[in-house]
Length: 258
Image: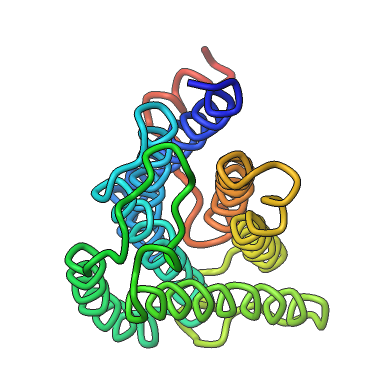
């Protein structure tokens, strides 16, 4: 393994570990509160973990068709769409989010079948960084363009829209159910802005590739993007729903009489 490969592998491993922690936090919140945006983000982070782990494996052991298919499916096709669903739930509530979730489940299954069975135009180079243009036909590449581009616009436009509403003194949510859930409009808007920033960072690998090389550019943006996304999730989640209640035992232990 070359020094560049070692650095990329270490960065991919770091992204995988951070995303795993992120996933456990969102899963714990969903199990406790059953908030639909927490479930959407948990699914997005599971996909992120698989994508980062695929890159980690490829940089450590070499690329093959199975690893590239997993990396492409979870990173380029599905991940951003499930992340955007969390934003939809935060801003528009279940009335809008639930039908979109149903459609996204169906589309995710269809896209998985397409990507995992699509014929490849050439063998995968185990040491080079493969691209969809070199290996896949039109349909998987269109899925990646639509699956990443449209949800990214939802995240970015939603973040700007919510920030604008806060600047005007309004609650950053469009439906009554979402407005009732927002305990801190400013935090909700800030969380959405951070989530949008994380999505932009994740899409910046192409810009960095010319300076850092494709492998390292993807690894750097994975680490930076997931950290910013994690921050956005924490901020937005603290602005939605009831605040955690302290347990009776802990309250007694902390009372002045003790």
